[in-house]
Image 1 (tube, helix red, strand yellow):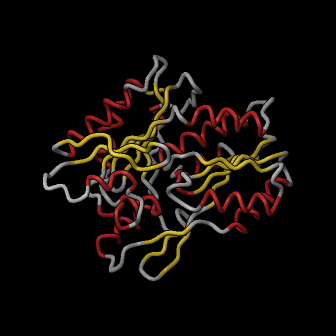
Image 2 (spheres, rainbow, N blue to C red; image 1 turned 30 degrees about the horizontal axis):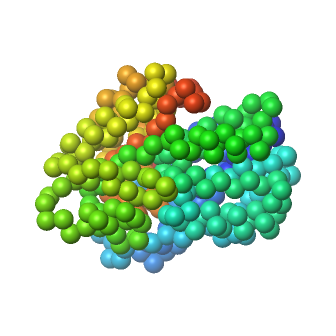
Length: 298
């Protein structure tokens, strides 16, 4: 247990490694993956490596569900026994019912002391903003109000760029957002996508996946305001591509990690996804050095 007055909570779509979550005093509430007749807690009862190994042979498309309000209420009640307040940061409300469930959970416990934030982000970017929240909460003068205000100010500066091997998973899972405009394209093109206003949004179309990765690197570098970048490179069973993106960004990174996308995010994005979450380190450096990249075994 940390000594911080403000507890930080997120959900498993932040795709952060367990040891980092533990060391930063972050509590993760898992979503559920419904897969091959089983309901499994994301990242707890099924790990990324197992999920991506089984996915090609799956007979039905995996589905997901958010944690119940009761699960959140239980988590908040436990944390409030040792903390003055909770800041709970979640996947975009437009992509999941998790935020709504967390709001209900807060109402069931103590809405004055539990502050729930719609990050309008997912995965790598949600992970980054959660790490930033833990950094803010560690400061001696931190209050839930000050952390919430800083996170809301920061949210628009966190960028998400990614490309998918196929749009089929986003389509099937109903998370395709504005990228539905790209469906049925006769040309063999690879989309460069972003998260804008909490939705999957197309940015560009390029001819090859290789070019899509180059664009992701270029777009990420444009975020740097001279103090380096805080970057998480995420991938769904595409480690070599993620390593390549990370290598190209390493010279500009104040913080750099490579993370497998968890089963819930992977169920909606599909295998082969590579993307980055990033923001300019002048906003809030995290001090997770490239040399100490959290290349965790899945």
